[in-house]
Image (cartoon, rainbow, N blue to C red; front, side, top):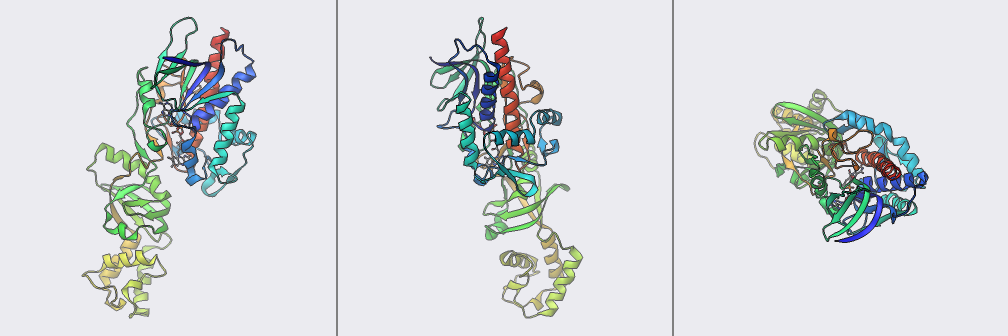
Length: 439
Ligand SMILES: Cc1cc2nc3c(=O)[nH]c(=O)nc-3n(C[C@H](O)[C@H](O)[C@H](O)COP(=O)(O)OP(=O)(O)OC[C@H]3O[C@@H](n4cnc5c(N)ncnc54)[C@H](O)[C@@H]3O)c2cc1C
């Protein structure tokens, strides 16, 4: 084994939470004026990829939706909401904005309270975090894939972070911020859970969240690429479980768009428990138009222009291709869409109005970890101190970010969780390391 720097705090994982934790730990140590004899660097950030923050660059479609103005615990999921509430109280949205402003980053608020860097570029966030880390004295080591964390016995105690190639870093305290299982292309494959498993930490069931859904493709494939503003209802068996409104996108595999991503967590959880469960999305394509008014209008329209081709019957109400698919589905017997509107029967008109208000599509699954933005489930939160994020099973060991059993809605909630937990773990791990050195 080859030894690398001996430090006070080692952070494993250079994502949003890990970078925040490293910066805060280094600043805390610097202001405390600790005796650094025998310490090569105060804080080391260990990242298995070639560079830190790769996922951050992809967030918010490259714009980085870094937080949300409406930050309440009910936007988060997991087994313990109070855990989330306690932590958000320790490092809030305002604290986050102040932190980024202190790095030179101004932000702007867009629709639904979503907060972005003013330039709408995720590179700005990453560049400033990397610069802040370097300026605070954090040593970043990339290509360092931690496969084990060993507790070191002896007077100085602490941990040894061992990489797959045998190199190691020694530290008084350690923060594990290796993310979850979502989007493995950015380096997250769930190894963090195994690192903590040996200390007795356990996970709640894991499944992909904020992810596109797969459906029967008969209808959606022909409409791939078309978006509309509507309402999506999630029906599980005979129960309407949840509705979400906003942009909905037809794709060749199923459905996407913010309203669908909002429903994906429930779908993932239900299908993980019972893959045979009957799950449907019911689309309201005209949310502002009440059913009876719509039906009256359709009848009137047929009377106003009985020669109008069926292919154009819904033009002006919905996208032309959606209109054609709906009319086709509504016909009692197959007819070419070149036929006139006069041939629409009363029953076909009722079915047209029905499908426009409640287009039912069977869900077959989600697009899985590769496409997911976040992990639902994670390390059980009752095994960590909610004011410090220190393990209750292994003193000196801290966690931050998505690795915990907390996931937020789409809209900046997950990055806020990363900043909040990174801040708390960074500060606590530094204070613990300093305390141990002084005592
Ligand atoms: C495409 C996409 C878009 C998103 N957009 C948004 C958005 O706009 N707003 C929002 O709030 N959230 C968004 N999210 C979610 C958000 O990015 C994550 O919740 C957040 O980045 C989690 O931060 P983290 O630091 O806990 O984990 P991660 O960011 O996943 O970082 C973990 C890091 O640890 C490293 N690592 C893993 N294992 C090891 C190991 N054994 N040794 C060393 N290093 C290791 C990984 O390489 C990675 O760099 C998005 C996610 C994706 C995939």
